[in-house]
Length: 304
Image 1 (spheres, rainbow, N blue to C red):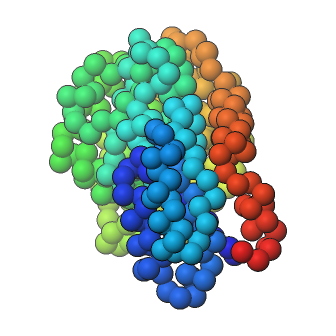
Image 2 (image 1 turned 45 degrees about the vertical axis):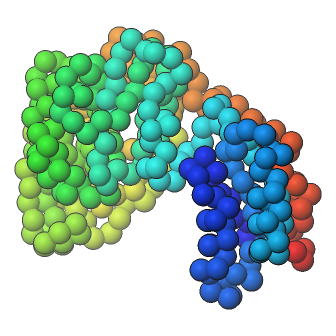
C-alpha cells in the first residue's frame, strides 16, 4: 500500500524525522513511501516553505499539505504521549476527577467522555497527595495488572485510594483498574508473571480475578471487553464501582446515570455529538489544507 507519513511538528524536529525515517527503512518498505504530511503547524506557512522544498528535494517525495494546529481537534489517541493535552475538560469544573496514571496505562480514552463534562475537572496523577482533594478517583485499564498494583503499593497510592473510599467518596475501576479493586488477583497460567502467582488487591470490592489463557474479546453495547482476567463477585460496594467494559462512559445515558449517583452531577455533554463534530472539523481542515485529490488517487491504487 502506498504510505503517507504524517509528522507532528508541534513536538519539533519533524523535517529531520521525515528524512531519517526514510533513510532507516529497508529498500522494500522505502519503495512504499508516497509522501509527507505535516501536522499541528502553528505560524506562517511561508516560513516553513523552504524546509518543505528541501524535504522534497532530499527525498524526491511530495509534501501533500500542512495541517494547522487546532485546539478543537481531539481524537482517540494511540499512545500515552497525548495525556497532558487531554488532562482537563473544556471548563474549570467544580468537581475534581483524578485518574491514576498507571505506568502501563491502556485504553486511557475511557475517560475522554468525562473530560467533556463542564462540571468536571479531569486530571491524571501518580502521587498520593494528588488524590487528597479528589471528588472521584478513577483506576483505568492497564496492560499489566500485577505490576501496576505493585507500583501503586510502592508509591502509597493503594493507601490513598482506600482512604478516599473510607470517606465515602466514589472510586471507579475500569478493566485492570476493576481487578485492582478486588480481594485477590490470581495468575495460574503465568500470563503476567510466574505461574501460580496470587496477589492481594485493594479489597474495596468483594471479587476475585483469575487470569485465563485465552483473552476475552467481545462487544458490550457501545463498549467492548478485552482482557485475560475473569472477575467473579460483586462489582459494586457502596461508592466503589468496577466495570470490565471499556468505553462504557461514552454512552451518554450510562455516564449521566453514574455521575448523578456518584457525584450528584448532571451530565451536560453528548460524547457521540462531540466526536462527530470533531471528525467534521478534521475533515474540513483536511479538505482545506491537504491535496485531497492526490491522496484519493493514492487510496485508489494509482501510481505515485
